[in-house]
Length: 374
Image (cartoon, rainbow, N blue to C red; front, side):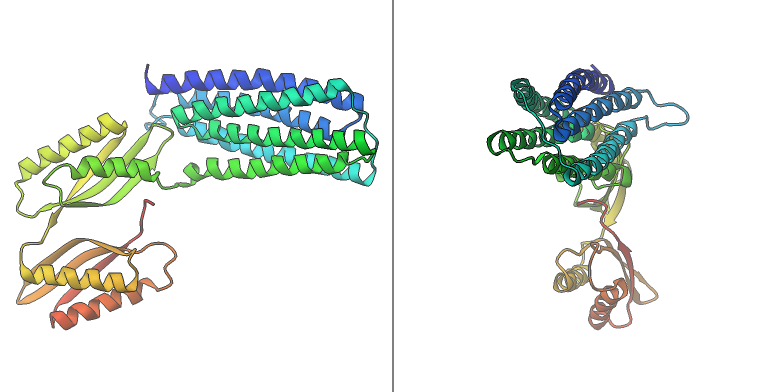
């Protein structure tokens, strides 16, 4: 089965299961809440209704994301799954905000709810059902690497906790005659808001351009560095067009005297191997490495020592020494991490001064890059 078809099938199973179970829970909880006069039970039921609607949105997202690439979308429609997950998160937040308003009104104008044995049974069964849904969606979400299903799983855990709060408020009222229903509804609402914020962060990250996970990067590195002709790699950039749809570009350092035809064949094999093992398109750029003379090696050492003194997280690549008209030029790139207190010019000035004291009259050309991976 193709990856897109597999994702759509699993998404269909998860979404339909969510629609059916959440609709049943919604009807049961709202009925119990209306009969008992419990705002927290009604709030919990409305939350299940929003979950059912979220499953519909997720279903639509999986359906669209499985569509084949076309002229308008040559990289496919995979990001539709991220968009559907984002829509789910927004709907969770909207429901939570409305329930906060209702709960505050109940706190201001309290009413005594009347819980029956049926209410306790419905709420207890609801917790078990939600825990099942959390495990079910988490299992499928991990299997197909779906942020949407992982968000739904986290929401189900929050729903279980929220329902537990409703049961606790019912027990307190039954034992002590104290109505904490409005406060319980407020706690349920906050659980919903928290789940919505967490889901919003998780689903918005890939849309905004989050870096790939470290496990994926390590797999890319291990494949590339297995080739004995590759001395190092850098400038790894990963574009995410939806789960299972990645485009990777990277630079590799090879000996400067490598035979072009030979190195091209090696790089071509690496690109094919990455596609076969990781399922992503890859473009590899070749950088010649200059490490064959003592002067170049000493200049490299001075640069790396200087960078270590400034901040060990700063790295260098694409180093080369160019000689012309009796003057040496040192050309290289450095990657400065986000959040470094020193300005870029301050870092490059320190490096230039060290190199100029080592090789008087030399010129230093530094390009500053930013890390595109974690």
